[in-house]
Image 1 (cartoon, protein in one colour):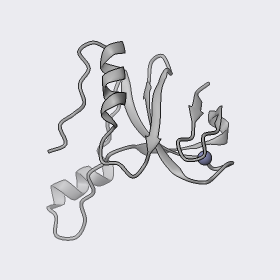
Image 2: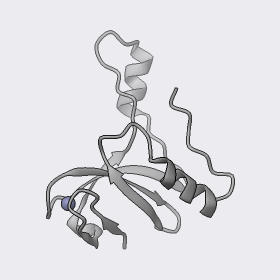
Image 3: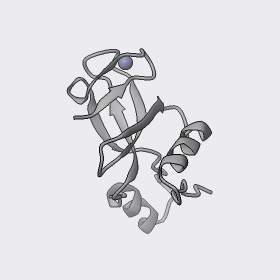
Image 4: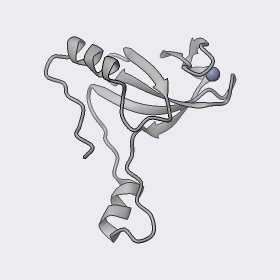
Length: 109
Ligand SMILES: [Zn+2]
């Protein structure tokens, strides 16, 4: 079972208090984008074996969305952070790199 901490209200609870919202940090493509970009935005998702960044909502608490970094194999939660970010905080990325040597954050540029 995942134990998550909501970065908005500070409550730490089991995952049943939250609801998963899929992959975090998607690049959104709308009108004017190519069909391939829009198709990728709609359907293509990472399915890593290891570090993954996800959206979660604190449904039985403050109701706010946030992001979480966790390992899909061990269920270790590296940290949570506000949803209003385009990439994980540097201190969280450093923490993950320390625990998972060789891991790097994808280049969003
Ligand atoms: Zn909350």
